[in-house]
Amino acid sequence: MSDKQRFQIALDNREIKPPQRNVSKENLRTIFISGLISILLIISIIIFMPLTVLTWSGLFVYSSIVSLVIFLFILLIRYFAILFLAYFYMTRYSVHSKPGYFPFVSIIVPVFNEAVILRNSIESLLDIDYPNYEIIIVNDGSTDDTAAVGETLVGYHQGRTGMIKVSLINKPNGGKSKALNAGIQYSEAQFVLCMDGDSQLTSNTLKMAMRHFDDPAVGAVAGNVKVQNRKKMLTDLQALEYLEGLNLARSAQGFIQMVNIIPGPIGVFRKITLRDAGFYSSDTFAEDADVTLKILAKGWKIIYEPNAIAYTEAPSSIYQLLKQRYRWTRGILQAIRKHKRYLYNPTVNFNNSFIMWSMFYEALIWPAMNIFVNVYFIIVALLYGIHITLFLWWVGIAVLDLMSAVFCIAAEKEEFRLVPYAIVYRLFFILLIDVTKAAATVEEFLGVKMTWGKLERTGAGNVPSKKPIPSVAGK
Image (cartoon, rainbow, N blue to C red):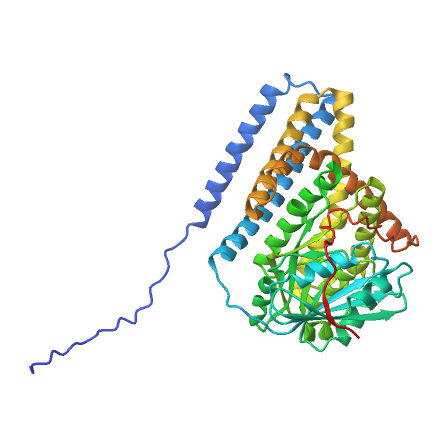
């Protein structure tokens, strides 16, 4: 035998047969266990049946309590699913760093009768900390002094990082979608930021949003919308709603890179993405939801950027608020009906189907459930005296909203004074909004004609201009 050891491997090719099963014994065991359980159930019925008083009212009360528990359980699943996904997104967001990306960007500002706030909006845009952008104002056939104010803003102005060009397009009135499309097609940039005429962006908005486009699969970035005109109960409730009801959901959607609505006040797009999706359409009252679904259908990623912040003026009266939410609901339902093939056939685009079903649930199913449950349980409490149970149920919901409010306000470093509003947020404010959504849903399916219903701007919350914008060159 040589110095090198030789190894031999003996292969055992015998087939090992599985152990034999005693089927008859297994069947006997199953019969024995099932019989024992049945006997125990029969004994329980015999013992407890005489102690049970069977009445229709008792059955109604017991079924109502079970329904309360089930509804609260569904609420818990919904809340914690959103909270966990949002937490994972924010954790990943705070850990991962992205390099700067600074291509030329066109900021499109569509305006219609925005003379009151246009100058302040442009001033805020000139203060953006980004080295390479322009501003394009699109006057959509305004009947006030918007065109005149816009003319005074045309030219090159000193911005935070250099000279910024401001252009003005005057066009006949055709709606926000056509105004945005006009600005997008006029722009020669490869990226566009679309906003509302009343939006005011924070200085690092563009820098934080644009860094996501270093990934060529990202087609759009949804920003973070906040309420500017606060200090009133109604607008404070809306400020909490934007934090808890909208931005928290966008954080959760950001984790899976499928934001379902790019908000009108702040959305940044790769222009080829908009061209691929067919630009904005004017056949719905929610052009932002419609264009988002079209972008997702083409396979683009949509990212949420919490530090791309736009402040907007919220409705300060109940009538204006309900009119706004009525339009939003009908617009979202129109967008869903327009893309309904994704509801029926998830094999076409599973991501779009998932987003569509979530929108369908939030716009149609959840408001109906919330209204029915509140009305039903109030009636049961009045007729059958389960006031304590109903009170505890409402306390449970209030606790959930307080948890969400604390999480959202801590995550976004917002005003802590908004937290107490969470006590009445779900029980009164959201219920009122859901009633409006239900009415809008009924009228949408009945085909009731509606108009755009523009929110009247007051300029509340805007910082007044202390000096005119210095123009270097005009045209």
